Image 1 (tube, helix red, strand yellow):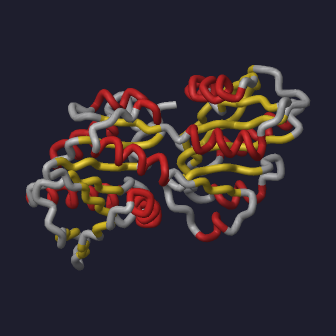
Image 2 (cartoon, one colour; image 1 turned 120 degrees about the vertical axis):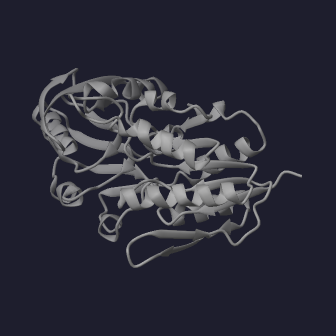
Amino acid sequence: MKRIVLVSGSSNSDLALKISDFLDVALVDPQLVRFANGEIFCEIEKNVRGADVFVIQSAIKPVNDNLMELLIVIDALKRASAASITAVMPHYGYSRQDRKISPRTPITSKLVADLLTTAGATRVITMDLHAGQIQGFFDIPFDNIYASPVLLSYMKQEIMTDNSVYVSPDAGGVERVRHYAKKLKGDIAMIDKRRTGKNVAKAMNIIGDVKGKECIIIDDMVDTAGTLIEACRALRENGATKVYCCATHAVFSPPAIERIANCEELERIIVTDTIPLPPEALELSKIVVLSTSEILAKAIHRTFNNDSVSSLFI
């Protein structure tokens, strides 16, 4: 008889609990010990022989520790004779290093793919990949689930109007924004952005009509919020009446929260719980957090039952 086991890493424990409640499956907490020199030891106290195991863990800050923890848990499960091991990574770490941007630089997204496969993962489920081509780095099944149903529902109920325009903060996100605009039957605009250094961006020109419009910026992640703040200012300077932002992954590296709090041009930012937010972010009324637990739980359930997950790809 098929048996499902849910294992929670330390980086997404709250999200894992919500997924566990949706599936009505007990959550296994692997016994993780860090030795004095920083090495990680793992022991799975539940019998997983012949079980289909889903490990919920994102490579988020501290990225390298959480990634190594995931690899060690997968290795432990493999050696415990699990029938299958699915790495459920709500946020795929190193996703922005998906190609060589200059000579003698790595493609770390591919390295992470190789590490997961070598450790023993038989499938990967993630949400809103920064670059779709990362799926091609894997020789095992890979499902990229979209957060758009969660974000679209909120947008329709709370911030969308007949006067809304959907904005991409850069050229790379136009396809994503076009998808949202099609669902919401609205127009799109784009910001011509120039990067002057790592995590440093300067908005240059607005492509599209935003004058007198309520703008909704749509992105896959917000890191230091530098791009977001520049985009908000550029839109308001070009006549936008209000500016909102919807993003899946709230990386929020310093000084992101401070920038968001002090940005008068930004009305509200809507993010999901793929990355746990610090208390100071949760206390900020301008930040709204939506849960992805239901859609991830459905993806896990359908994968376990060998059902199609294509209806989640909307």
